[in-house]
Image (cartoon, rainbow, N blue to C red; front, side, top):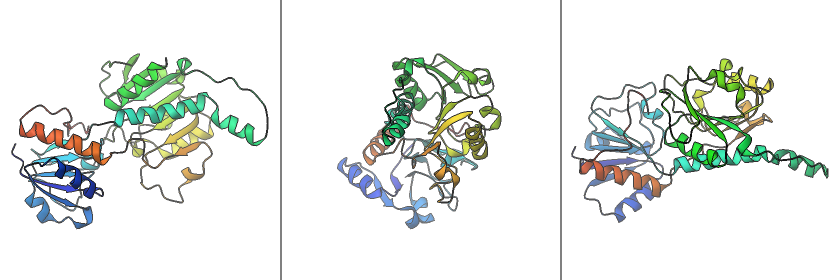
Length: 310
């Protein structure tokens, strides 16, 4: 594949431009924000680099599309992908960032941070013995790079970590990997569920009433995609104490509307999609590495299977 003209469309295009120009790449670049892009820009380009595609435009003649994020549902979900167009995604420190994000909330729970904060406000000296991560069982949905990094860190603290994937293929750092259909029998033993799954036809509202009904007093962390969760079922599971808390970094609608009831729920912790942020430096490094491998006809470790959606 020959790539000469590259169109970069991103809110951080100025930072990307500065970093790319330092590398003196022998290509033609255009840098834009999405509102400035027109169809002629796509007709000019061989490659398109962005966080998403705009359904108003035709991308069928582009040779290569590169996602500046790890997720590609904004490129593929409910869309027909053009035949012959290569899709790659960013792989960088996402796994480490998300693993540390999840670890932080699990430590907060086992160390009783909220309880001690309330006792402090009451000037109440009431010792509670913290629990150990090594006594916890964690189920991670998604056993790819992000799920594996999370499993590695949690198993390093001694937790029993189980994985759920579409294939059920065993992976390092997991005690066992199960399929979506076969994992239900294990749910009642779990202390925490972590979702890292992409959004595909198979994962839409995967976390529903049927799944939550298998749980008892479980912590739920969603760093995958918001639409994988049935919001009504989540609220009901919190009310029924099937879930003791939910940490939500992703939502069906982002930004989360001001009138959404998640904001005021006492057992929901909200963060604004920051568990794995693409920095300009990391985004550019992955893009340039992918470009170099394409130019040199080398294998791509970040290629997306557009039929599977990840």
